[in-house]
Image 1: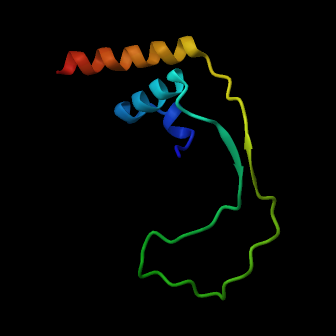
Image 2 (image 1 turned 30 degrees about the vertical axis):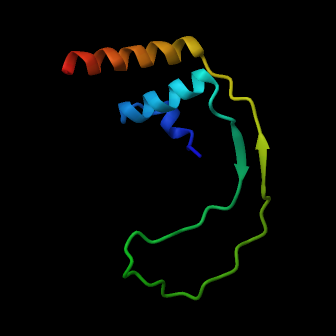
Amino acid sequence: MVHCQIFTNSTSPSSYLRANVGMLLGDFDIYEVKTYRYIYSLDKKFQFKKKQQPYPPYEKGINKVKWVRNRRKMIDNCRMILEKMASIA
């Protein structure tokens, strides 16, 4: 399972390459997931002062979708990242 951000955000070049090359090769099935966003504290010592409330009703489910992307742009971006990596080495 991979979040869509890794496919579009190139701040982590190696992850971007892995994800997009896999996408180009057809290694991924794309799903839209309907779920509720939970709030978690980053600090394990943090305690909420208010009593926990039940989550409101929400729609749950998973739908397979087709994510239409510009394959030429994906290839060009991957090539550019590889060229930068090669020039550093």
